[in-house]
Structure formats: C-alpha cells, structure tokens
Length: 136
Image (tube, rainbow, N blue to C red):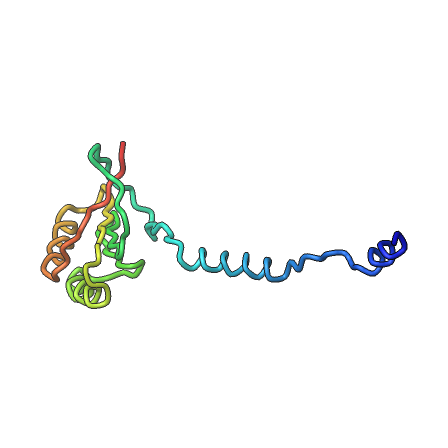
C-alpha cells in the first residue's frame, strides 16, 4: 500500500496557475478606466482668472470659452470672432442638449467683451453658463 501512494505521488504533476487570462483582464480594465475617465479641461492659453471668495468648483464642463487679455475669444482653443459665437453655441446645443458653458476671462480683459460673449451665449439658448474665477 505504501508503494501505491508513492507511485501516485510521483505521477501527479504540480498545479500551475495560468496567468495570461488574469493579465488580459487587467489590461482590459486599464483600457476601460482610461477611456471613461473625465479629464480636467484646462485653458489653452495663459489666462489670469480674477479671484472671488464665493467661487465654487463646477462639475462637468461641456464647452469652454476663453477671453484673453487682448480681447481675443477662443472656443475650444480656436480663435473665434465675437459675431460667430452665437452660431457656434447653437451648434453646440444641437450636439450636446442641456450642455454647460464656462467662460474663462482674463482679469485684465475688457468687461465689454465678456458681457457681449455672455449675451451671445444666452441669445443662442444656452441656459447653464458660468464665469470662471479662482478662490483667493
């Protein structure tokens, strides 16, 4: 009987764990998290935002409109004439119903350009508009 145990023990192979499915699953999860991650949208130009004690963090931003110190209006990093802001906002609303717009204006920019940009956004039908500021 002792001999029978020894021969069975010798014949059995060690248990191996196949790591390939585990590695594949980790890579699939990594790709999933990279694709679904929300990345913070940053200004494409150097803009010094004004400070405000009542500034709060905004959730999801769908479109960023920037106004530089020189009064240049940028939508998604592209220079845009102030007269074409309304048509761009209408197109944005068709593409993203209920989307939000944030206006990032330099503290040295003209208030007139900011108000005109706000007005064009509202006339296009955008309801969720914010003006960016930073906490002091």
